Amino acid sequence: MALQQGLRRKAHFLGSKIKGLRKRNNLTLEDLSVRCIQVDAEAAPSVSYLSMIENGKRVPSERLLQIVADIFQKTPEWFFDESLDEEVIDTAPDAAVSGMPLEPGFLFSQKLLQLAIPELLAQTGTTGRQFAHLLIRAHQEESKNRFPDLERAAESVGKKQFPLHEHDILQIAKRMGLKIEWFDKSSFEDSGDTDRPLNTLVRSFFDAPNKIYLNRSLQAMPARLKFDIANHVAHMVLHGGDGARAPQVSGGRVSGRRHDADSANIDAKDILYAWRDFECSYFAAALLAPKTPFRQFLAKHAYAINSGDAIDLTTTLVMRRMSSVSPYPHWHYFDAYPPGNLRAVYRGNGIPLPWGNMTMVSDPCQHWAVFRMLNTRSTQPAAQISILRSGDDKRLYCCQSIRSKDAAGNPHVLCAGVDLAPALSAQTIDAMRTIDMIEASCNAGGGSARIPTEAKEQLISISKILNIGWIAYGAETDATIICQRSSNCPRDKHCLGAPKPKLKPKIDEIREAVLTG
Image 1 (cartoon, rainbow, N blue to C red):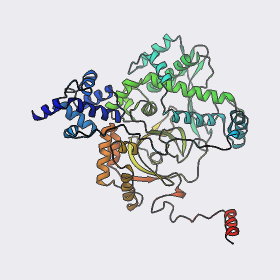
Image 2: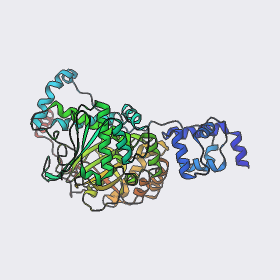
Image 3: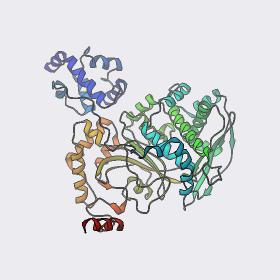
Image 4: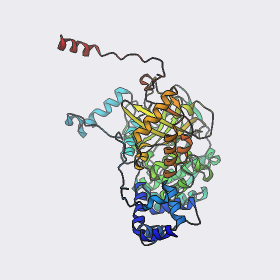
């Protein structure tokens, strides 16, 4: 009774604190309502009732206040503390994706770059498609993988229906005037860009003005069938079905030119086709997993990367959509093929890469979760907490990885992860202190060790606040120190034994000797 009287006296103040918590964690009223339903469906408030609580027009019951307290990892008493220090904090990492000023600036004019880039690519053996992938990735990262125009275009076609079943997507294709033909072609081996042959399967292609050709093998893979049809619907909507796009292929060349190109020189079509592949792929994902209902679906399943299995959504689609729909913006994902090629990368938080999709390095750090999963036969998802050292910069990550097979039968590893430092900082926790605590434990264990109790409790709390279940799973296992290159291993116990001393370049030695002589 006393608690309820306190609630009435402080209704407006209490509502402001709930609103501050919600905004600090980038949740809409609808998001918070859904989270409340997950905790206690019977006592959960509607969106309109939550709005009235936040504006001081209604008083939450003790039961509802406890639900909100559980979601944000507070005690009910915290809401009666009259300090209003819960401002939204800018938690963008200091080393987020960014460029650098290049001088003299006139050398980087549009005209000179257009003249120099084709020659640069030809001399370095970089294909137009590889270069386009780098440009597209930079565009994704600058936009935080959120493209509202493509979202709206997809929603206008799919009407935000979720889930879309196979017959639903076929009906949409029919409404768009598309005709479907089937063909029978099995996979074949293609070494492509790597020394290791990969199975290659031509899944589908578009024939202007309105015909989709689908490989009959997709009938046994409904998740991939839905995606391919949605992908071609996107081409019809976005490009008028002009047919200027590459066939949809699994396996084979990890990052080469478009599959019908023979020229060793850059071809403008390579870049156009790569961009259209990205646009259509993003549209298809937004059509099959519209933002608001899919965001609620992910919340219900605590962001498990294989949660789409039950509704015929590929793990790749689920993983990529997380970064586009999650209230938490600090995501990354990898799609890795053995021995170390990245088919897809998104690093919205600036995570350094151990290798890329253009060239491989001789000494990548083997402690990354994707490497561990590439070398296992397990098909179960696994979570890992990692301390990433890159020079003086230290980051704290958690990812969930799973080993899968593409439509051509090639094994690969899908990995989605989050930068944990911004989440810790948003809860007024000293993120660097937590990172140092975990790193010290790892070094004491030779590079990998159990997470100290205090840090573990913090991570479990963050897991509940963000509603990302695999952060808590990762906190229960050993954390690991990772880096970009094994030769620059930051562990106290160096991965490759005693590190070799770095020698100064001879030119620098001569200069210093002259100046000090």
